[in-house]
Length: 263
Ligand code: NAP
Image (cartoon, rainbow, N blue to C red):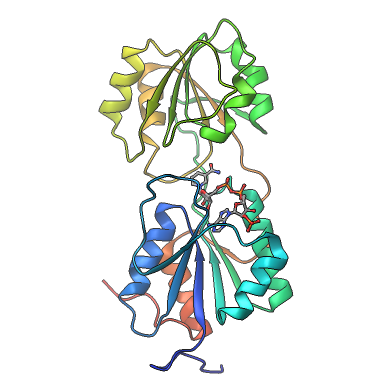
């Protein structure tokens, strides 16, 4: 294998496409690695983002062509797409841009959630299907599908919504609603109390996966509530790993990081 590990005078850098806990964990692991030079990119959607360790840049690249130009100009030797599983446009853009620029691409994506004993989940392919199915499942919904998803539910009459988002959403919104601005991680006790306080009878969520926001699923199971689970779109066509250690190994094999440290 060619060793193109960067020396003190610089060399190929790693671009992490971020906006997730996994992206921050990867940036933190690489910050401790003297062999790695890393920049994390954020979309700039959230007013006060949780910033990762190390260098960051904010804002779109201008589509796949813009990203390909940026990869070349910034001497990027590897891209890790650690964006949210529902951020489909940037993931598609990364696949195209990396092909154009000849840059190796890895997708770091936590697995989706899996229903267990006692769960009553109704899987739907998209937000439109979730809105269509909702009136059959309940009249008081806790809606955690994100700020950009609310228009699909806005036309629904006769349903109360407890809407939880990180930043304030823009209209159109459902008429009968309480808005809660918050972000995880959450606890089962907190989620159970919230559902009880608002007499929630159905939970609507995207299949984001991971531990940070899974407490609501446990609370829903304990309270016997149905869950409307919006499925992920097709995964990006690129090599994919589920955890940070595997991403570190991939970067080490490319010669742009030292790899996972034992212990
Ligand atoms: P999206 O629809 O896939 O992306 C829309 C556009 O935003 C992209 O085409 C790109 O603009 C820009 N963009 C997105 N992520 C970027 C990044 N990490 N760095 C630079 N530009 C980025 O994305 P989204 O669903 O709006 O999500 C935006 C960000 O929030 C993502 O980074 C994601 O990780 C994070 N996030 C999303 C969700 C969710 O449910 N969608 C949840 C939690 C966190 P250009 O085409 O101009 O390059």
